[in-house]
Image (tube, rainbow, N blue to C red; front, top):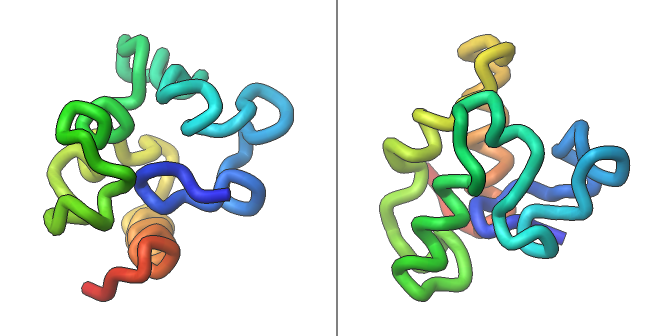
Length: 94
């Protein structure tokens, strides 16, 4: 079960199951968006606005929105690992 940005909700999301039913299931209205004073995940909104199924179809991943919604508690190494995992889940290579 991957979100539009390639996060594997079951294994990569700490909120999944407790505070989150999954990005796609919640139509991007996930709990962490409050950290950014938002109602909806900007990545999810971008994919929907472009009428795509995922970031894979866009061709810009990882984009500025990915960087702007970075987990503020993640180290640079953790963030890069997250990016690499998401790209692999989307079957993209950088």
